[in-house]
Image (cartoon, rainbow over all chains, first blue to last red; front, side, top):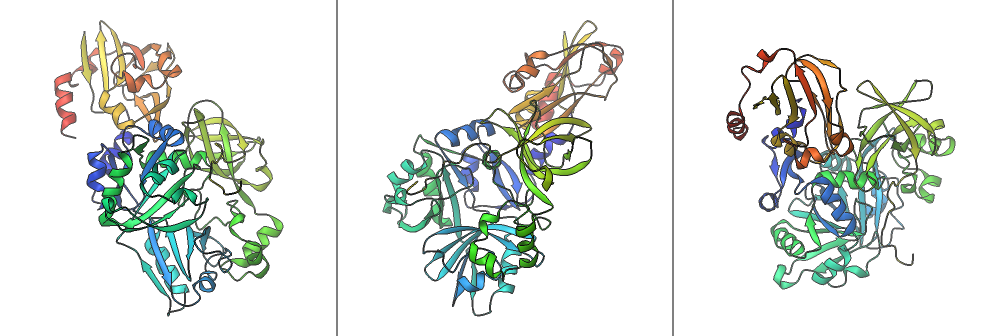
Length: 383
Length: 123
């Protein structure tokens, strides 16, 4: 068979930085691959089993490769609004907001989560882009603001319908938070007594938490979490299939400098006041796209048959004209069929539109599908 | 009956002039959860090194090349209907296709089981 399949195994031998839980992953049977410059677990027992476990119980993800940044000084909210299109001035304390780091033409440099912590902001960015992001933020913000890369912090995600029950047993109070809310908690003395920053958020479409803590303390917490039989460690493979089912874009694949928030269907990240006032990078183009509609739109696709159609496949209209490309695609373990995400000409973006996909010379029937493919089950307060 | 192995992680079980071809346990392990297979139809002529079948896991797509030349006698419908059979029984029920060998001399120089298992350990 072709050697492509063994490339994954070969990549594991390449030099890469190690994360605080590196040896812990290996002890738990992880297959390690290089991702974002780090050696990371792609799977433990198998992607499908881990995926299903997260949807049914609780999965523990090590996302310590991501960039954690703490921004403090005077008027951080106003300053950040010059690089992000979100409403940050009115963001309440301890609330998270999904946002986008934009370039001057409205292209997406990265997607991120920003949380107000008093007058300060805690921002989590993608691992592969973090150094560039921090540079962009430092350049853009007034020199009297501090942009601290929290390199000694690890980050865990606990995701799934049983995540709240599991974490509440270790750290009482966490289950009182609603979706997109965060707070500081004390770890019990048995786990080191450190301060943990925990938010109710994640990248799977499930209820769950993200936990920022000192790297020196992360192994004890990871071990305490998997000691609960409801929790298993989950690798990057299932993280990708879970977020695809949830319709969540992955930077570098579904988002990049050639896509704008409007093309990507992320206009919820641009709140009303920002649309009225502008004042963020690329505002001219983005506001025009909001008004007139973008040329292309990100869509979900149901693919006929069983064969996965992956990133790079062409999207064709009924006459065989190229109208876009697949940016993420794979087999959905929850739905037991292939699903994909891609960009198409705006006129073809309506759910139900019949399209063809072309991969390695073979044609597939596909239909534009509403996203998420698998309903979100976030814990929304008052919902 | 003799079983041969290739450096492309295929096995070829030869019984008379019929060869059964599949991927090794090492290959299925490297691929991970297999979700799709495509096998050749009976009657198709395959030459050595030609693309013969497709195997896709959650994370990767791969072609299976025919390690020897011949006419396809049968594709294994069982792995089309249930691709996970390649994970659970790669060197048994998870075979891909049977060939009527047209040039048995091509088997010369392939590894036997002991040589293959020893070689895999060095990877």
